[in-house]
Amino acid sequence: MSILEVPTLETERFILRPMTVDDAEAVFEWAGDERVNTYMPYNTHRSPDDSRAWLESLAVLENEYQWGFVRKSDNKLIGSGGMRFHADTGEWSFGYNIRLDCWNNGYTTEITQGMIDFIREKYDPELITAECAVENIGSARVMEKCGMTFVGFGEYSRFDGSRTYRSKKYELRR
Image (cartoon, rainbow, N blue to C red; front, side, top):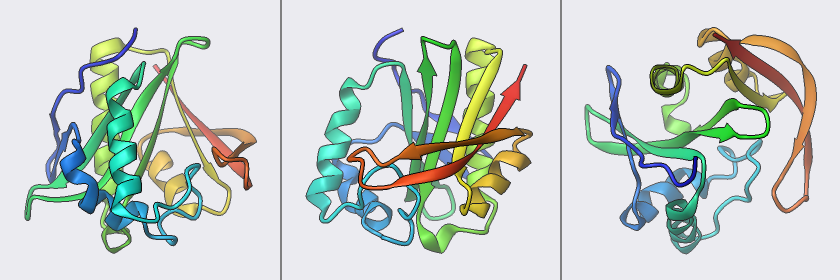
């Protein structure tokens, strides 16, 4: 694999589509919110310019799909996430992030299930994995609702090394 063409997907309430630099202001609405980014590996964006730089970086990602999550009811971009292939292990993993005012509506579960369904249909992987901070009960619940099984504890760090989180690891086998 290499740079993947990101298709547009659809769930009951969402369109999952490729993002462009024109989405920077919308992305900043969640990527710039400390509350939303408490357990994320990236630092909170300080301006739409940070969001724009991140969006520009998506064009060269290898072995990864990244989607923007657009709510059909109002055409609002409310979050983003993706699926990454790990060539060393042959597994896929995923992550996501949505605006705080969109939490607890079942959105993330619906979107994540859509991403998983796409990867299963296209690649039929043996294993899909994910992890979240132990304290991130909402994300753990999303993983469980998507049929994943808790398999143990681990840890991950912010990209800049400023913080390390104890994590819960989940997997979904074929």
